[in-house]
Image 1 (tube, rainbow, N blue to C red):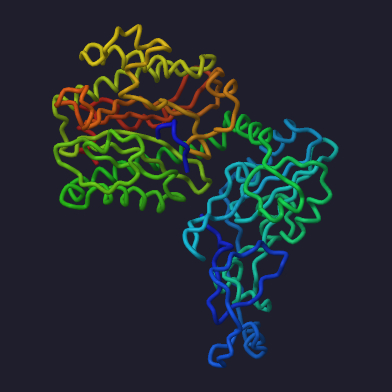
Image 2 (image 1 turned 45 degrees about the horizontal axis):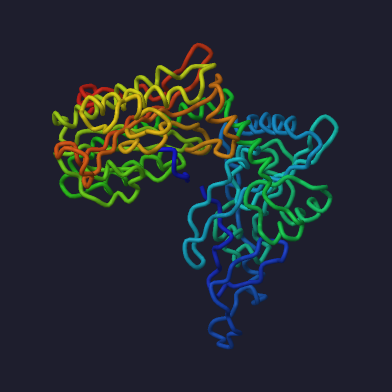
Length: 506
């Protein structure tokens, strides 16, 4: 996915409101619940509030077996998180740290989008529970970690049936604090104790979306310093993280195959949405879901960098740009792009554009290695693009002038960056300093993308008619190794003939 624009499981969300006949007050110790509208006292005896009916409350407290309340974690996540906390502790000795999981954004009224935990929170806990808060208190030798989570409401508690956010009758069997503590290997305390824990900290550093009321009570605001530290720590992946990214890439390649098989249905009328839905269903089946809004662009739409609307037809004689990534259940995502001919064969003009992008891509791949500047793959690919455009007579100046900082004329057809870090976020480590990111050397353990392209818009009058409406991008995910780089997505061909052949074997 192009990297110049800002990127993108759900437990029960705090915005799920009980049905009117089960409305009950939520204890003040829980996160504030938005109200869709004020409700007056209802005198109609035919609509009693169930939580206020003693007989009903007593009856609902009895006769329940124990459901599955296992804490679902990804194997290895807890151990990896402990290692990550140790690294953060070493980076901020003696400083209290608070990291919040956040909450699901509201879609409308009392319905929310799916919840995904803050990436830093998951990196440090291995836990994906909404409203969770990690508190790291300085201690001899480092920090003591305590995870504060909302407790589920079980039979015997009126909230069991009256609270749509935490009542098991609404959300299903849910692990309690003891189950989470055993699964994560960390002390887990009720969310109600968070205020007392924060009151005992001196000038803690905060990141993540902490409940606004809680943040206000304790005078807490986001720490740019902590966010920067975490981004820079996350740049070099450990063995467990690399394994998760390999899994994400492998599932994504399989998802590409599933999408290509549906080209005939898309051409017949399903359109871009059919292909988008195919991949998103595959990602949800074999992972947590897509790692970002899937990009499916047919014809002229392929020239729009982030064509996430995916609402156009798929034309048989046009290429289809697919920028897709499966996010694993550990929230690590792939980010891979290929451009396929919908008919199975590129036209001469389409192939010429693809071949130029391929040459630029291979130049970029060759520039990824430990000790090299992060910018090297960008400049290597850009030089190939500029020279190719000059050969086609599309530059109004010389190649040297176009490549100069004062020129950049070739960027008319490639305004985005062509690579970024990859990990828990599709545009990973975005809060790092320039010197630690674009200005740094590549290091073993970094995972990044290389993704040059050419974007010839239908309405661009600087182009000859045969090139207008062609968009091509090739994107691979790479692991920087001690010797050079490993292309994690190498199972997908790079060349036009290879892509045409690959389509026939899916």
